[in-house]
Image 1 (cartoon, rainbow, N blue to C red):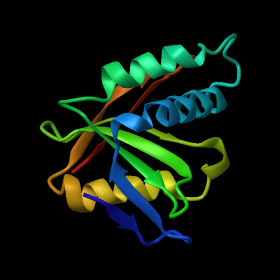
Image 2: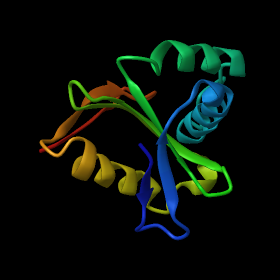
Image 3: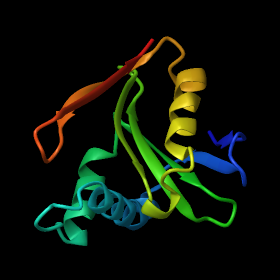
Image 4: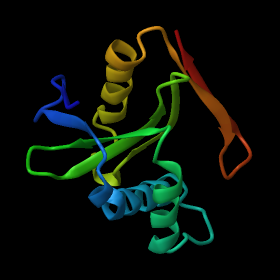
Length: 135
């Protein structure tokens, strides 16, 4: 399954992650997390993020990558399609603020989880609860 996010220019493809994407996913996750948490006292080294990708992005979850035609990885999301649950959504710092995350969420709403989906509340570094539901 490859989906195209046509409302973005240039177009972005959304495809399932493959085993050889682990390092790319780990790098993007670490960079995006660091960008979202600038006051964090430290950021775990890359092997920590690689281990988490291997442990958390496999079955029953589906990891989808958003990338340009040249292979540039822009974002990823991790879904549990059985529960219509969005587990993770991270956008590379250089691609933030351009509507990519919103386009990815619209795509899962329209095609993958038309009956709705959930994202359980989590706590950010400041103790604030963040959560969302659609449908």
